[in-house]
Amino acid sequence: MAFLSACSALSPMESNDSGPVAPVPLTDVVQPKLAPNPAVDPTLSQPLVERRCDFSADLVIDPSWFLREQLSSGGQIALARTALGPSALCRKVELVNITVIDDGTAAAELAQSVNERRADAIRRFFISRGVNPDTIVATSLHPSSPEPCAAAARKCMARVLFQIRGVAR
Image (tube, rainbow, N blue to C red; front, side):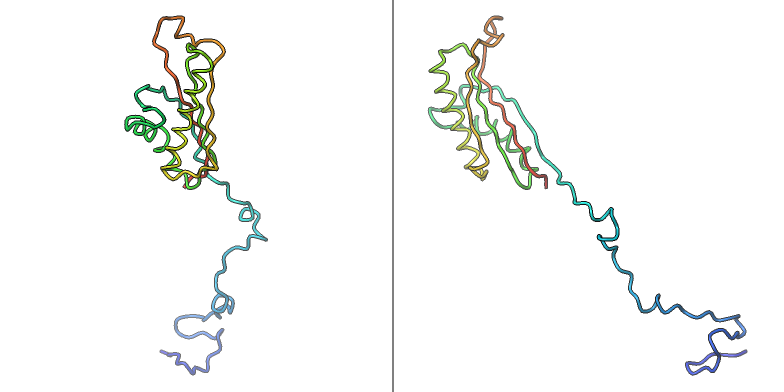
């Protein structure tokens, strides 16, 4: 039985008792495995698409949510559940669009001023919760004709519509 030592005189192709010894390719020993090059691999050169966390919500306003120019604690809780909770999924909020719409049954001038105060109170609430003021747009609308609920003798309520756009975490 022949043993190979570190200083063996056998060439790599000579055989010993265990059969022929194949040479080890130099590339497997010397060259490490490199990551693919994006310039060569077209699938890696594509930019990653940002995941979005866009959503919208429609919330009926309870008049007890507003105390003059401020939101009551009930209003803050309702807004936090409806809008701030889902927006927590956003890494970056790009736009918060707030639109307060009344039912159209009150006089236009009075309803518009009430809607503007409500929209401003909601805007201040978002700012107090850390949303960038530059991303918030707060508007108010007064429909030219009453909502169908007024004709059906149901109690009409004002609404607030939220549209939030952002980049997901």
